[in-house]
Image 1: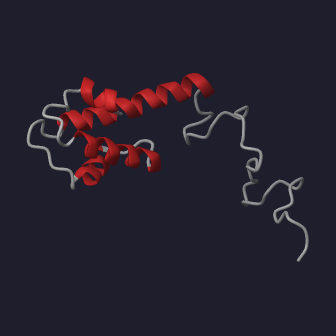
Image 2: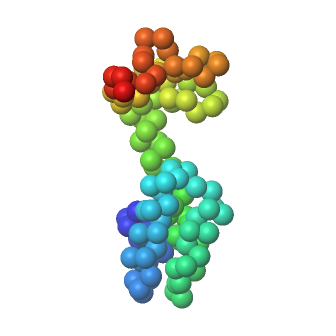
Image 3: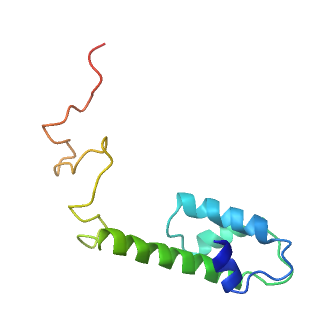
Length: 117
């Protein structure tokens, strides 16, 4: 994020950059592809007198784009228009596979592991 802020011209006097960088980092941790309004709302408490906010918005857009390209290179593109990962994508060991259309877990998995009470 810091490199993107510098590359986009958002860093001028440097006073607001630490707060902007941390705010945007926190936003991107919870929302991997925020729209401009969401970024603006996240930044509303950070005051900048030098750059305005266009550079910061451009930096966030660039980071989101770069992360999406890196994910596509690492994992391939999504299977369908819903954005689901490809079927051969590795899963976290405790992550269940796809559910049937009614939302039930596959039969080979215990929906309540951990023994009896």
